[in-house]
Every structure is written in C-alpha cells, then in structure tokens.
Image 1: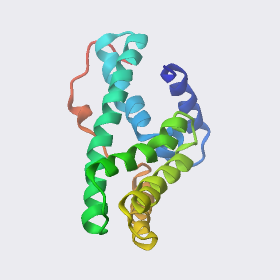
Image 2: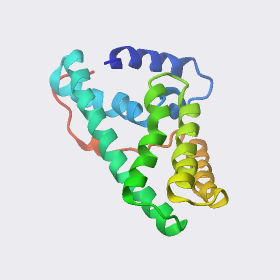
Image 3: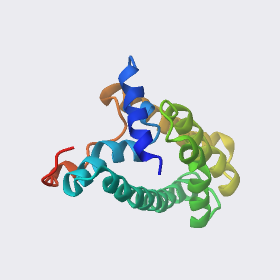
Length: 177
C-alpha cells in the first residue's frame, strides 16, 4: 500500500547518494525489481499509475512466497547435507521466514538495505541454522561469510547484486512511463 510513497522516497535517496549502490538505497531486492522492472511493464500496458501499483501488490506477495519456498529448499539442502545438520524442510522454511522479518519490516525504507540484509542473512544462515538444525556455530558461520564475500564482490563489480532479468525481453504496451 505504501508503494506510491516508497518509490519517490527511494529515488530521492538514490539521487542524493555519492555512491550508487542500488541495493542499499532501495531497501530490498523485491522492491528494487518492482521499481525498476515490474512497475514500468505494468504501467506500459495499463496506462494508469494507481492500477499499476495495485498489480504490483500481488506480484510482491507471489514473489515473496515463491522465493521463500525455493530458498527454504536450498537452505535445507545446505544445512542438512553440506553442514551436517539434523533438521527437516519445515525447519528450512522456518529459517527463511524468521530471517526475513527484518527485511520485510524495514525493507521499504531507503538506506535500510545494508542493515536489513546483514540482519536477515545473519538470522537465516547462522542463527536459525545453528538452533533449528543443531549445526555448531563455527560451521553455521561458513555460509554467512561466503554470502557476504559474494555480495561484496557483486556490489564492487556491478553496483548491485540483482542480475538483469528476462523482463526486458517482454514487449512494452502502448503507454510509456
């Protein structure tokens, strides 16, 4: 519901920044993708900004649910088979949902992504894996450190951690944003 306010606020935050790291300014990868890819696509077909934002809301919900289910399976495989944990797939889902709370609560705020992403990944990769999968702390930190290094590498090389998507291949409608 706050998307119409969030977009101008995030654009302003990115415009005043000295270093343009979009992931920092947009607060959340999902919001970044909605702002950069989905909203212009929806607007190009609908021609009405309010309708385009209303279509973005179920897109956000579907993306969040799909990502949570996929990442839960990935985290379960990582924690159970690579790190030697003793949890179930439901524990993996609990890790993802519990860990996503900081990003979901604060992800709409500009400049909150660094704090939210650090807090979220620490909860998902380390704390949740340690408590729900009974993985020792030293092994539970391995995925967190690997993720942090990959993220820093992506930010330094590309300015973002989000790869370009396939939405650019979809033809635009008659309306231009």
